[in-house]
Length: 315
Image 1 (cartoon, rainbow, N blue to C red):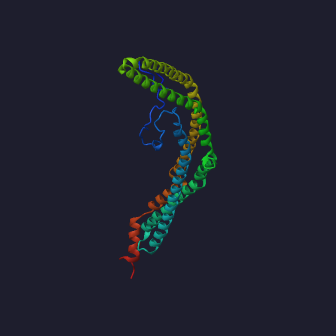
Image 2: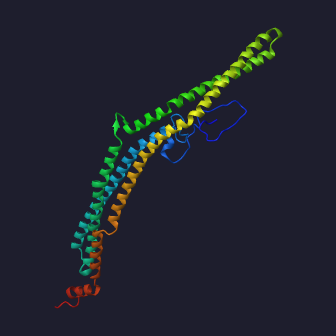
Image 3: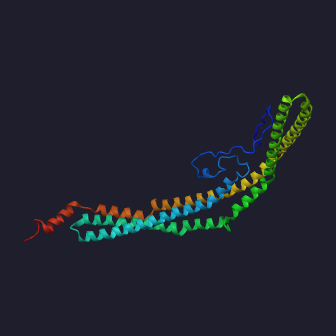
């Protein structure tokens, strides 16, 4: 019988409550699956550990997010440096090349776009390193204060869960003990009845008294067992309320983390939008390139070549 069941169950057999709803964690993609409490009923003794684990994970997830954006900032900076190096190289190559005229000018402007795009990526790298990442680090520091080797907030939640569960855990132990006593008494009675049936006439009277005592013990043990179960039924709502109060506070704490992460993602989105949409550098790059391209004149280049190197050169 499940003491946390919302539906009542009736049976003709002796009541046999279980102190454990399930001892098998539900497999899933979540990292929580490695926690022994994952997939168990929350109100079982110690099952709140999965909630504490989530609180602890918040610190590690914040660090992961910092690491991810640090890597992105480095990638953006490295890319911008590579673009600048590329641009310098090809400006030099064009100076030495045999290209000429407006074709050379447009080619050179193509190289210049590398410098302009490099500036965009360099700006994103700086924004990540100087604004977004420091905010993440500060939030992690503010919300995960360490107390010796533990996070203070997690230890507070753990203490409150233990306090809320203390009397309930004792009651479950009492039920377990009374259950063992009851079943042991039932076994003793069965053995006594069997001995009485197979005993000789002269032993039967003595064994009958012993069997009667055993049956009385069964009744007494059953009464205590059922009383403990009824006590658990009465205490369950109060126990669940106490546990829910602590759980709700952990939900509030997790909500703060998720809200901050959402704010961080929003800020990153704005940075990317600034990088790709309505970016003054990119606009100027396109305008410069379009202007240069509009001046590309094949006939002019061919005429220039003819006048300087071709048949139109005066002898």
